[in-house]
Image (cartoon, rainbow, N blue to C red):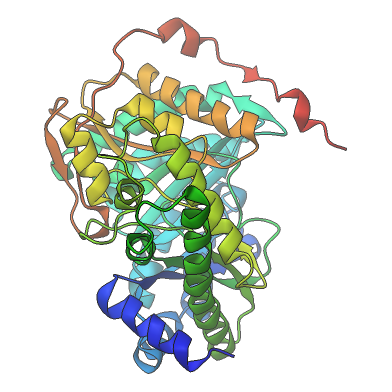
Length: 448
């Protein structure tokens, strides 16, 4: 039971500290929609999503009104499309986008392929279609898993993704490469992630499930203001207690949505997900710990403390914790990260170091438009190696800004925000990427 004191604290977090439920994401299994005829498969997909998710948005709005808790997004994730597409996947993509618009969700994720060990013909067809699909659809998001701790890194897929990201940027150049903001490349992708662009409904998931993502960077920062100059033991304890409160609210919303929709509760994702709004920044939590900017010496240690304390606090507040769960560091979606890059305090190399201890990876980073496909593939390979060796999820979501150079700015609007174009290492790696094949899994992958 949530006590009166907790209710009052929650009201203050909502009114003064930018606290919200970032998303209610409905996972839907589409394996039974597969058909050799792409048109028939697309019709089945559209019908099932509209039938299953017809009350999702309305129910989310009802809970929001009755509990007074902002629920920013209502989303859908589906079975990776390469698993159900027996032919051309593009009709399925159009059906997914149409269904998302019909039921009124903000985004739909799952135009995805899992190819960490190799690629099926369906995977290859889906990859080839990604640039066109993301340039023509509005709400559809795509992801590709190219590595895992158990399988190693599929360098053929890594090489292809560099080219695909470049093509997607070119086809959406009139919107500053917006298509690339809906495309993420993973290592160790998780099956119950409620956040976009990487959400999909994995093969181990039930027929459908409610997954909730909470967010409260502003709440954590305000809490730390009360312990300035205190030792890090106190900082960690303060973050743990705050994460517990945040997650309790997420658990309440998840179970209420599950009950009203008569759909099983999946997980609560503990991730601190920032927005471009001032007062809602993960980077500003780091500066509250004593750094001038995110990127200053000590940043990786500060982020490691934050990520760990969030998990420790949140894990006690929910029966089922999953997704990514930790601290996100997207550049364009975090005003503190934007300021740090603009000031020259935060480089791509420092961001990569930070991904060793945070929840995801190199996220929403604009790079010069003339960055080569091989360089992008190299960035993906480096990030995949971090995920593989450390047995954690990592990802790359970069946006080559066509016609722009380091220091320019790209504008996406809304939750996607804006970002300064960051400098990229210009030394060549063409022969390295051309090798292809697989980088073997590390020794510690053999745990049976």
